[in-house]
Length: 172
Image (cartoon, rainbow, N blue to C red; front, top):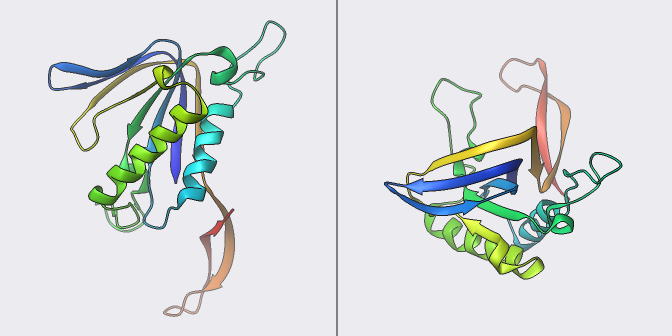
């Protein structure tokens, strides 16, 4: 599971001419769900989102989380976080969970955030819709979160016999 977390002074999601989700100060989270994501991945990202210290206290930067500050969270489902762009010019989304499965997974993720935090502080976009996401990035602060540990490994390309560096994902 992947997420892009942005500290915002405000953010909203519009579908057509109606605003479906809107927050003041807090974090906007773009959420990507992979084909092999599990409840463990969901829990890990939910805890990271709520616990990430991107806010300042009166003495120093990076001291307080969205929960500590009692701010808002806007979650937007975004399968394109799993777009693979290594071949050609058309993104490959085969690693993103299929729509019907990911809708239920995203709903569980939002429910988990609301359970761990406060339901009234968590807003969403509209799953599967063409959304316009507007935000004012505060800082700017933008972080990438991933529920999988990844490393580079050396391997030999079977076709060319050359050694290549490949990105390898492992379970946390």
